[in-house]
Structure formats: C-alpha cells, structure tokens
Length: 194
Image (cartoon, rainbow, N blue to C red; front, side):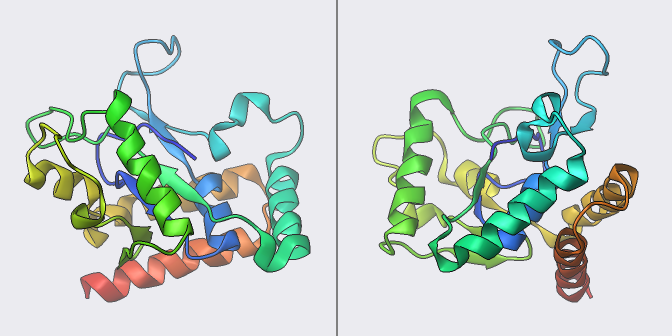
C-alpha cells in the first residue's frame, strides 16, 4: 500500500502478519493535494487500501474478503508493506528524495522478504533501519533518512482515535479482526508511551 502523509507514517513498514496488514490497509489515510476539489490541502482523507473510489460494494464486505483470503491462504499469503514517500521534516521539506531513489526502499522490501535484512520492530510494524537501506550515493542527510523511517508511538495516538471513528462510520460489517488489530495497536502505543 502507499499513502501520502507529511507526518507520523514511516517511509516503509512491514505488517506483523496478514490481519495486521489488512488493518493497515483498512485505515490508510492520505493528505489531500490541490488536485482534490472537495478537500482542504493537507487535510487527511481515509482511503482504505487506496481503493475507496474503486470499491463497488460495502467496504466492510471488501475488508472481510481480505480477511477470508488470509484465512484461505495461510502462510502462503504475501507480506504486506506500506510506503510513504511524502514524510516531511519540521521545516516542511521532504525527508526522502523520492522518484528513482524509491527503488532503494523497494530493494529493502525484496531483501526483507528474502530474509537478507532485519528491521526495527515498532508499535506500527517492522520498519527499515537506515543501515539496511542501500544509501550509496544518496544526497540526503542520514538524519533525514532516520527521521523518515521513525514511528514515534506518541504520534500515533491521534491516528488511532481517527481510525476508530472511521471504522465505526464504515458500519457493523467491518470484520472483527480489523477492530482487534486496531485495538492491539492502541495497546502497543499505550505501553510504549506509559
């Protein structure tokens, strides 16, 4: 999955498992751009799986389909990753250069799937460590890369509340597994910030 977030969401995150990845996709939100006629630039819009305009049926049923696929596929299901090329520093500049340099993140994803690199376990999932990315020739300060990869638990508190409201808005057909995964995230955040 991919989102457009100026803050909070790390450059790349691997889900803990299929159900966790389904929750990540279900609660995906992106900052609005000038291309959106209806929204204020920068405001967040929930966009499950980055597919909201293309969901032709009830979103809860759509998410249930993902849970069902995971149940059928078991350990044969692929790993789920979330990328965010749009994280910004406090001064408003992008922390990651994007474009062709995104292939460095894709390489980490492949290396992670193949078991060649480790990850930092955070409240939101497994995130890349700067030392595991191929940064050869990258003209970006290492501090920016580290900040782009960070997932401060305290920053996620507001996202959890917003995601709880959004899942309630989607209605009673949202799978219990998605709610349970969001509750697990909330517990991890509370434990990390206590």
